[in-house]
Image 1 (cartoon, rainbow, N blue to C red):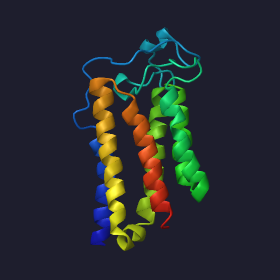
Image 2 (cartoon, rainbow, N blue to C red):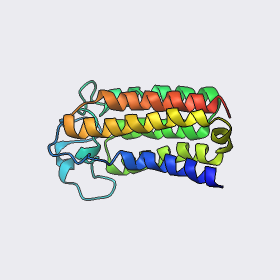
Image 3 (cartoon, helix red, strand yellow):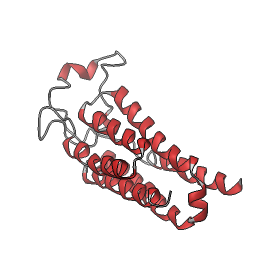
Length: 183
């Protein structure tokens, strides 16, 4: 039971790490108009109309195509979807799918759904915690993903860098593939 508590504590700390020193002082990314949002949406008050908050924005919107707000963050989810399909993991497929949608359509409510997708994928590790107990070295890639997530949050919110979020998606996919190969 003690080992299960340690695994759960480590996994839940991943979510806490992304909020360390991540309050954005400036809006570092642009919000150009696109298919899914327009400038008047900045002042929307309805739950389904509010845009993704500036501190959660990861790249300049609609810079590559008017149909995808955060193109590179959307494209990097191919890694999550590929690993999920390869290992037949509905949790990872769900997490990758909602991440694609939330990076494509910049609405706050979809950001919440994206976070639920991360929880869904994390629940797989919690439900199969004996895998970690039998292979404790798997905690290192999980911790590495948590570290990349913290760096991503800092770099995007304080520096305006997109690449760390793309790396986070790829690192999460690699760690998930490594974990699922032992399930």
